[in-house]
Image (tube, rainbow, N blue to C red):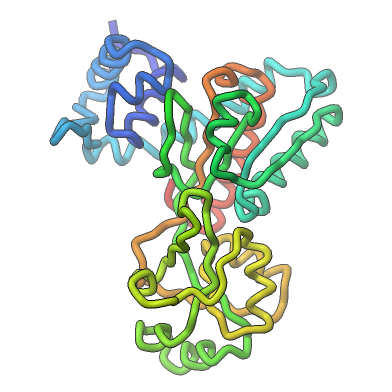
Length: 315
């Protein structure tokens, strides 16, 4: 009998694609390794492809799996929204949902999702906090319901569920009168020699141990390349108006900010970095089947899909 396409199967393929470990995927999905192995074998028969091949203890996706992954993510988002709509009476939901997120993620797609949730369920209350060094421990302890972080590569313990929303390039943002703007207009591009003399304003993440990281790779090797290091993207925006510092922001976030705040310029720098902004949802297994949280994750996923479509981003 052929393996049916279920949410459980799609979620296994999604997690395995990102972890490249069947045992880790089984742990995060709270299923046994033998069950995960049986489901994977069924998926291989269903799609008539190995989907993953093992090499050096990792399971690497096949070209067929690479093509399937965006469709799988879309199906999971649609299922989450559908389940939430059928299982939840928004007018009767009355609780506090606690979300931890970086301010750029909140601005881009968490806030619109919350506004939609409150429109349909006015008794819901949302409490948002910044990402901290203890945030993932708080998720495990039930003090936080959902984390939206800028990457899925940060250390995650236990069987925490992970869903990457999209991947976006970075760009430079400077004040409109910055000398780099004129250089870009003249050359149509920026080279390392153009950018290197200028200092950057860096965003310190809770896992950087207060050591700033730059998406301009050579800056991390230079002495004191960071003019200012602060924890908030919004604060960094205002620093740019009064200084010659360079801001490094995910391009969708930068374009949204520039549409609201005049006086800044966006400068692309293709080829300067291998870093990508990959906003990712993290949640504990205890909320995996929670109707309210399933519904909310679906709303966030829909907002993220709109951003992907608008800026032609990869999933």
